[in-house]
Structure formats: structure tokens, C-alpha cells
Image (cartoon, rainbow, N blue to C red; front, side, top):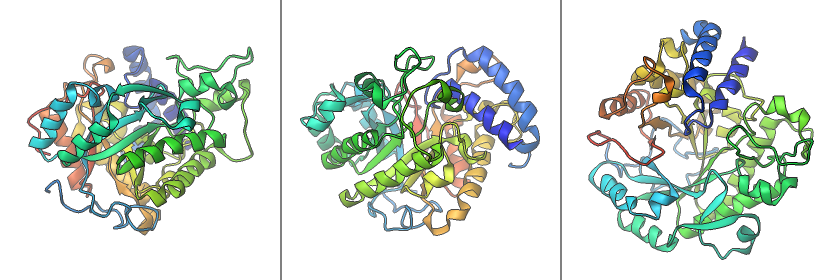
Length: 401
């Protein structure tokens, strides 16, 4: 049963990273809902402050792998996702106004985005050689000064192994098909190879520069192989070793933490919410516990819309934000329990968007009540930190954060 659950997890991930809209949503949702329900119905039944306060969400005081928190004066983070376009454009003023008037206190800003672009002008020759800097954020220094003025805790989001730019520039660092072209997924995205140390060092160089710019935390996203990789691997040419994919991915996280430690920044990782509820996803190389053991903050993406029929006793999890988040937190705490004092801060991504692609009858419109329900479920689960995701950066008003 565990093997089948993991297989369906990987199929489910073909929808795209939880921040993305799934392609062919209605048809795929129906298939996945039916298949998932048949396999997990039995399993699903088993689970049922001020912005400047010090951290304390049930994790260890150190907030990381057994050591001191690199940011001991950090607030309990309640943040929003901000694209580079928003950070460098007119929408920033609207987002700053939201933070100024509420208990929200942090922004997660794209510094290396989902395509692989570095989102500001850099003079770093290493980053110019491997990356492709774009001035989406026209004045990165000015942005950092503005965030400091508004007392915003700045987090740099760096998309790691999903990188079409680097894959195109250096196919040898990616996955090559039999006809010599760089492999692409259904959305025409390419990934780079987590087995390549050069890829590790490049992303860490981006992170180091972000730290020097003034970001207090580095958040790594897409820390994994492509969806369904175990089915593709035999038909692709790429460098690999005897290490398992989960060991390679967690090895990158451990190495990144070691490299960034002297700079006094926290290291966080985004991870599929499902990963806390199933055995390790060997195909994409994500092991929830192994990754969590080497970060200061773990951010499971537990959007209710991304759980299928049967999870946490819910026919349509998207329509039950409170119950879905409560169930996800039960599994998250259970998964991290063996880490004891090395447990990182748990800071989930929650949903502030409407998942209309699930099809009529399977979703609800998300507003203040639905966002509030998720926050309530987190608080009752001993989790006081969270991040709000909306790809367009249009966040719901009237929420008591």
C-alpha cells in the first residue's frame, strides 16, 4: 500500500509544484480524486500574537539542526509571497500597505525564479556566467532599504533544480534525451541535475549574494528531481552516482546550510505537503525528515486544494480548509517527532487563492473566512508561523492574522 501511495503522490505532483495551476485541471482532478480515494480511504481515516514576538511554534529554540538560531531576534514570521515583478513594480506599495496595517511582517521575494532568471542586475561574474540576470527588480539596494524602513523580514526565494536557463546554457548539467536535446516537462520547463556539484555551488552563490544584500533567510524551492523522474531516468543521459536521489537532495540541503552558516542567515526549504503523510518520495528525491534535519525552517505546502478525495476524512479537502490543515499538521508533527530537539521551525504555506480548476462542486471561493480557518487550524496545532501564497500577489483583506 505504501508503494502505491507514493506512486500516486508522484502522479499527483504532475499537476506542477503546489504553487502552480495544474494543466487540464478538471479531467485530471477527476481521475486523481477517484484513484486517490480508492487507495487512501483507509489511511485518511487515521488522521484526523504580536508580529514582533520571539519565535516559538513548538519547534526547538534553536530553529534548526541542533544549533543556535542564526536569526535569534527574528519575529514569528507571518509572510506573503512576492514575485520579482511585484517587488520591482507598482504593486509593492499595495503589499507594503497590507503589511503595515496588519500583523503580517515578512515577504518571500523571488531572487532566482521558476525559469531560472536572477531577478536583479548583478556584477558577480560567477552568476553572470551561469545565470541570466534580468532587471525585474530595478534597484535591489533600494528595495532592501524600503523593506527595512517598513520593518519587513526579508526572505529570498531561490528556485534550485527547476532551471530552464541553466539547462539551455549547459546541457551537460541537465538531462539529455536520446536525440540530444535537453529534456522538458509538459510545460516546457527543464530541470538541472542534482547530482552535479556545479549546480549546487551556483545556487549557493546566488544565496550568498542574497545574504550580503540583506536578506535574513534563504528559502530554497524545487529542491527535487522532476515529477515522475523514476519513469524517465532510464531514457535520459545524465551524470549520476551510487547515491539515492533522496540522499543527493538532502545532501544539497546539508551542504547549503554549512556554506551559508557563516553569513548568519536562516536556511529554509519548501516541500510538498504530501511528503509528511507518505513514505519518502524516492522518485523526486524528497524525504521530509532528511531535509528537515538540515534546515532552520521547513515550509510544507499544505494548500487544501492540493489534497485529493479521502484525505483527512474529507470528500473535497478544498472545501474543508480547517479540517485539512489540522490533518496535515498531525502528519507533519508525527513525521518530525524523531528529530526531537533538532526539529526546525514549522512554517507552512497556506492557500489564499481559489482553485477553480478542480471543477464545479469540488472547490469553494477562498476569502477571509477560509484563510482564517487555516490560520486557526495552525494555531490549534501549535504552529504560529505561516506564509500565504497567491501567484498574482492579490491577498484577501479582512483577515485577522
